[in-house]
Length: 161
Image (cartoon, rainbow, N blue to C red):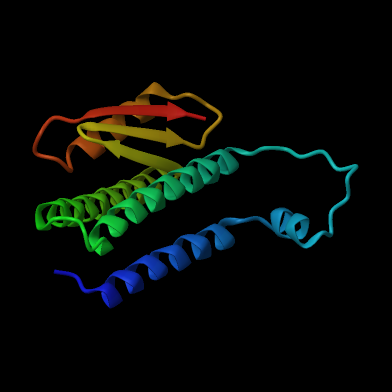
């Protein structure tokens, strides 16, 4: 079993990691807005990578909420051993899913040079590519590359934003 000290370390480390990634991925314009050095007369343009960053932040927040729920179950003194085991297994599954997403994102970035966002829910893998042109040939190649990572059939969708 995980003791409380290790659980708190994992919780705080994951929070710091997500906030660090969010800060690093922010552009100079966003940082200047947060610092208060902005000009109201400027027009804000949304690029493809901004959509990807927004999806990643939203997903990270939902993952953190799920992790918090499972960690609360693990720390609950009134929870049964079975509930704690289920929560621990769910935390491990969540961690495995996140690592699979990162592996697929890296594969697409390395092979096809596209910024992307990957969401895995069961047998469904949703991929959002940061590109203005919708290319079905590239989408098919990406689907084949991702499917080659798995032994079982997955339902893979590719969307261009």
